[in-house]
Image (cartoon, rainbow, N blue to C red; front, side, top):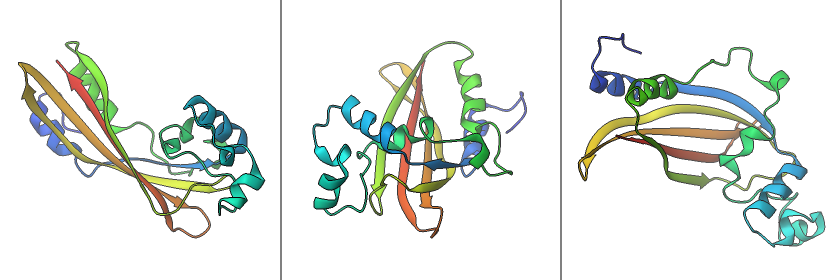
Amino acid sequence: MAGDDASLEEILKGLIGKPTGRSKVVIERGPVSHFAAAVGSTSPIYHDLDAAKAAGFTSIPAPPTWPFAMEFSGKFDELQPADAQTGNPVMAAMGRVMANGGLLLHGEQEFIYHRPIEVGDVLVSEGKVTDAYQKESKGKTMTFFVTETTWSDDKTGEPVVTAIFNLIHRK
């Protein structure tokens, strides 16, 4: 990241393409079932293996928005890549924009599925910043940070889901 004397515009442009990190997660039944209940799903496929298999899955599937939370319920320290980076360039830049206050908002989020996530999967991620910019809206400055993380099957390397996340600072 650029030094303290760099303009915010330079910092934002410099973020694009930077890696946000890599991690590995194990998809476990308890957290998946609890998440499904927390988001209000009553579908038996998230709780009952026979129901999941009857619906065409090989194991209990994760709900569609699971990638938002899966790092909080299956990212074990001993499984992480030895060369995994520490820190996220977006968070470092966020300090600069938050220095004078404002609101931090969870903006758009999108999940592009290549196949369902299922209990028993071990997924590895590769993330990067895809955009960072500012625009004015109703007299407020909005700073947008967009990241894309591709989660792949640890055994095959095949992509499973791509998560696109937009974080917004409004001042």
